[in-house]
Image 1 (tube, protein in one colour):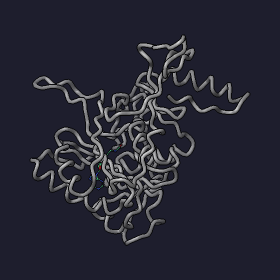
Image 2 (image 1 turned 180 degrees about the vertical axis):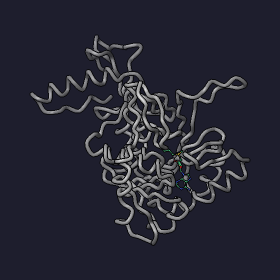
Image 3 (image 1 turned 120 degrees about the horizontal axis):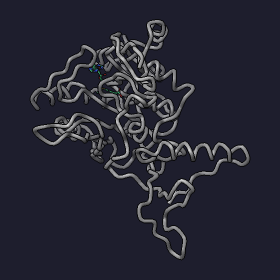
Image 4 (image 1 turned 90 degrees about the horizontal axis):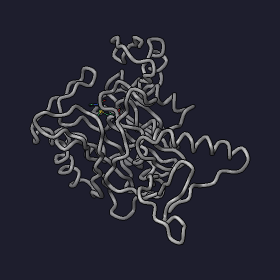
Length: 342
Ligand SMILES: C[S@@+](CC[C@H](N)C(=O)[O-])C[C@H]1O[C@@H](n2cnc3c(N)ncnc32)[C@H](O)[C@@H]1O
């Protein structure tokens, strides 16, 4: 166990294997230099690869119209939550709907006509998000993410799911690359025809099948203390989850915008996957975490759960490592081969 400072400067005892990203006082000053503030209207170069530390409502009007290929929105949900001093209080549906209407139309102005938007929410906020979004864009899907964390409830069923609404502006003309988000799953009942695997692959590590993803996502854990992406942000999204959105809905080299950036997950994933980013975060501690993670992404582009161009099931880290080690050895002798897709 060792005593570390949290991002808000409080002392906290952490286990030695705890990999939570923190910021020292020395780092703070240099990281501040990575943050920007928008004070007047700008063009594309004014927003590209920038982390704005300010209130979204003071930035939106200055941003150029239709600059983003993809917008990922993870707003404060209709829950009582303390974002390092910025307190949100659960409210009635009408008030939350009014809040969503105060930013969603302005955020959509920034989306290219061929772009896509994803809005995250829990069951309590989902109805409001859907009601506002459906009048402004064409809803394509509701993704359900089964997340494994949170306290058990005593008086009702523990909430283990979140919604992510996927919408576009043009019914037909939008980017969607399903090939880039295939899942590698263990085969439970290996079926063979003439002694050969039917649509699956036999490897030393086990039998696997590559499948197309559905709108039910059960392969993603919430970041926890031993993961290298973990921060003290109370509602940090997993890099693996955002990677699916970025790969499927933003072309390589395109621009991803996140109006409620938090600890920077969207920008970090965009950068790791060769896309440009832009994000706004009101809280200094979180904006600094985003800046630090973006610097870390310059030398480490790994995304836990995504390797070899495919998304792996939960709890397969050892298998991924084994396959990667083998690949590194093979690569020394021969050129890289794409995994077989079924
Ligand atoms: C749900 S969290 C986003 C978490 C983020 N997806 C991540 O992975 O860390 C929402 C974030 O919005 C920020 N926020 C709330 N109101 C804001 C505003 N008016 N302008 C900018 N940021 C805001 C909060 O400080 C919080 O960090």
